[in-house]
Image (cartoon, rainbow over all chains, first blue to last red; front, side):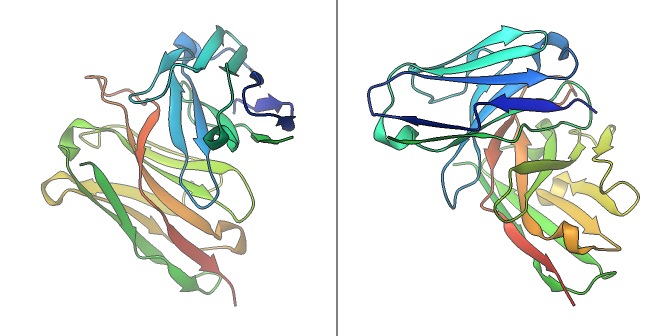
Length: 108
Length: 123
């Protein structure tokens, strides 16, 4: 099983600031089969990024993904009030399709 | 509008069974891989199972292998999860999730999600 580690566990920032979230996988994820999701309280996860760096439909361009192999990054260039949420990475290249433990981004 | 609506959750005793359903609309189910993902209270999501568009490929998390069975009926626009030998640690909200369309029967990121159905396993 590929284990995903996310850092930091939580991040306190102000609106307008830049957020940088990290996801590390225990093995290389083939063809960058790595996704990022946002989850707000009481809601299902929402796909932000797939294939490590492609934005999903309707996702604002302040969200960007990068990385390959075992190291991936989600960047939110300027935090909007609605961006304060929990972010999860997931690899879908090798079953089981594991999620990371999440990074909570909250308001400073 | 794409819709995924889960049903069938509830309270069940340890060792019991439940069958979850996911009714889909707004897209052609037979073109998409589908998943069940669960989330225990206060925890992160846990992927449970995947089924390819024509049911040719099926995968399970180790935690449910041998106890859960995923299936689909494309003619009825529905996805199912048969859950047997339920344990307390299976307590979670269960989401039905549709993969992105890629044109090939390969798992992909989960683009559309239902609102979930709560399964509680307790005596």
